[in-house]
Amino acid sequence: MSAALSPIDKAKFVAAKRAAQFVENGMRVGLGTGSTAAWLVKCLGERVQAEGLRIQGVPTSSRTAYLAREVGIEVISLDEARWLDLTIDGADEFDADLHLIKGGGGALLQEKIVATASDRMIVIADATKQVDTLGAFPLPIEVVPFGWQTTKTLVEELLTGLDVLGHTASLRMNGDAPFYTDEGNHILDLHLKRIGNTRQLSLVLNQVPGVVENGLFIDICDTVIIGYGDGRVEVHDAEAGEIDSERFDFLETDNIFTEVED
Ligand code: 5RP
Image (cartoon, rainbow, N blue to C red):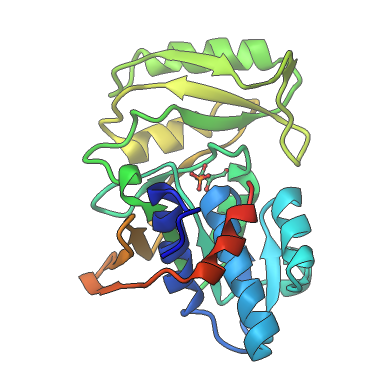
């Protein structure tokens, strides 16, 4: 077992490694964003190099596009692919219905477009992402820069009438400057603490002028693969429940995965 991998990295690695087994020759695959998705990209790169796996990847961010090319995956745009066989991505939270909060890495818009354009979405996560009720993780929403402060006020007012515990929003920063997404927008993080009605919240948020998209993924994810620090992985399917559980061994060569950075 590699001493260089922390338990959380091992959990992400085994989830990614298991997810990579779902990828077959000729597939068009949506590639998620974040530290867990970065492990997936690296695992797929390993399969491309070692097995000659032939896939085309549609990245959900410029960061992922860079990493995918670096590991030898052919990168195409969503407009070139039009439709995908499979998307594999991380998440900030998931519940028992496999509804998600995403956008912690600021890529929720492209992630949602790509996942929606896929026959299947698999989420890979360590067990800390599993929750009874969504909302402890601040819900990101992507907003256009024009009038963002007005948008923020409108959203906060809206929240007071909805089934959530917190009603404040904060502008995501990148150091001293506002964070910009790949689409040139800002992110507002909504501090809701608990979301009682995810469907209502998602619909209502997207009605606010200036809001481009929100980070709630409802009825999009088909399967969640949960990784654990001891090498166990569980595959949970939205329809079938838990369908699979197994254990991976860590090899010294897995050290290369410590180079992966989000
Ligand atoms: C990026 C995302 C990520 O998938 C999410 O933030 C999880 O990231 P990580 O795997 O680093 O915990 O939604 O927009």
